Image (cartoon, rainbow, N blue to C red):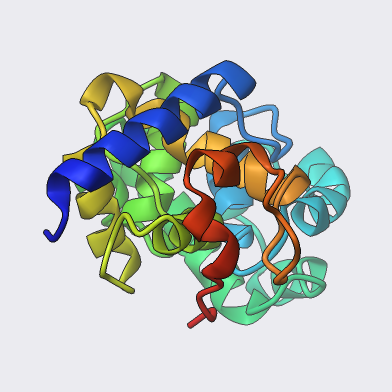
Length: 220
């Protein structure tokens, strides 16, 4: 990786800020049961947490456990989440995952990446979001659109693939701090520095590396 020492020094300052600004690592996706969180994360792909929470406010009154989702009528369930992008694929994935969790794991959400990524709709990013939220296990850095955007803006990666970006960040950031990266950058991107090009020279992270103010990578 180019400029490895520079990138490590830069990310150290970024993570120090995130730890201080967002010390409580918690998703903004609403849920009451473990499998509801799995569902919420799957629904949140290419969708805002706000939109997901609006749909699940009603949905989660009806479906609580993996068994509940496994028994759902595919046609009805698809209709119930139709306000979410890619709802047909997500409905199929959620019901499929619910059946596996019910039958293979006795209704309990698995606690390893290897097991989680065998579930429909669950990839590297989703698996590590689930492990962190439900079990406080941080064995990887989940990369979503916010994390990708800031990784590119602050020149922490040359990759575009989300998993490859995760691997670059995992090389740069000490493992003890992995838990703060996704959560911190998501909240910072949501409430401080959004994706549209704007004047952000006075934003906390841009002050740490002013060059970021001129770097606006296009979403891919």
